[in-house]
View 1 (cartoon, rainbow, N blue to C red):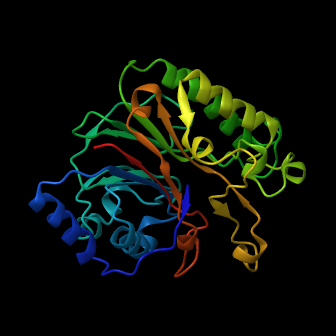
View 2 (view 1 turned 90 degrees about the vertical axis):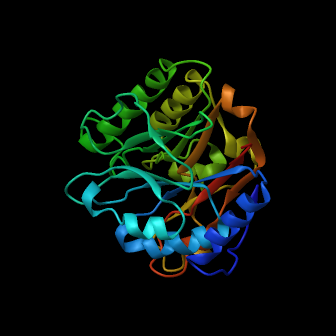
Length: 295
């Protein structure tokens, strides 16, 4: 697993130049997939553009886009070398998911996971046949009691549907599931397991459901294949901290899973959290996370 700073590059020309060179030489390279809760794609399109120029992902999966489909900045994504975009947005400035790609995308049906019919799930197929499922799981509010907090009840319902929904899908299809799942399942996925046991995102009700769903659907948690369980691992740091980097009170809320069919192509050692993109100009409170797979 790598924690690598960004490389300086021209925001628009770098990625396109690299791609043209690869095509001209007839070379093949791994497919690089990134997941990122961008917390408003219209506001932070420049952040995505800079990231794409520096890190050259082939596919970027975004959560919390906070826009309707007609408001999505398609032109900006085309100019950054990701012209193929599928999206699902909604009114009200909440939720929203999108997949932007250098390669053509074909929409794929997804399980029925959200009882509120929010824009939280989208999936697409690459020309290779690989399916990428992008999920923005409900945060669940602040009170970890489904009787007192309907947002938490909604989150638990979503988690209960997750495993059975994916277990029903066609077997043998290479499938990657990514997204902001808003649950930090392991003890070392939070800065203090003891202090956060009663905090939404790390309660036993959530962590147990998430792990049961992952295992029952046949997915591997790539982060914990790449990084030993005893090592702290975060992808999110609260914006409420005066200095998020200094306090380093993070949680691993952003995930990349792969099913058995896809695991043969996964380059586990390529798993990368990019914490530098948690800082800088008007950052999201999430860092992007990347993985490479054989082309």
